[in-house]
Image (cartoon, rainbow, N blue to C red; front, top):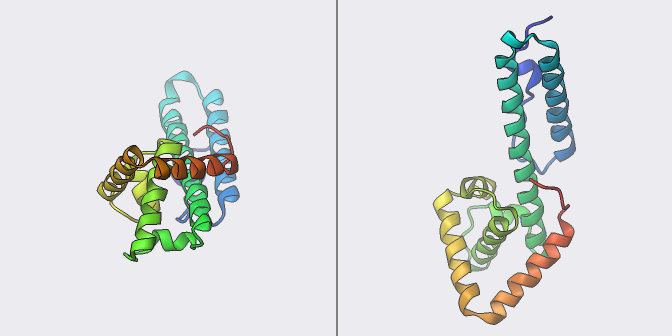
Length: 167
């Protein structure tokens, strides 16, 4: 049996994930299938490196799935506010764009439960910026009934647009 190396089973891909999600997912699925087939063919004493390789691919697949969900959510929000998704990821500090970015960060966290670091990576921000945005929008939701209704309606439209696959 040929030796498995990290680069033969685990494909690498670059950001942004939203450019071509299907091929990247297929590469990971094929890598996982290959790793799992190897696990069944390897004697019990030689399995740990292969199991570790399968585990790393599962982590990569989970990261990909989170990133693709974040891209769908932020894209939907950008469209609702007549912005481009790249505007939310830009360094622009214009008040309108900053507010929409904060709403997007809040809803990304609420709808996916993704870690602040993952959300920050998607928006090209530090995780502390995401925490601040989340807390800011959360406080406003608690004090302002009209704003809460607005956020709930926005979340409702997004959840109908986002596939119901589990992360």
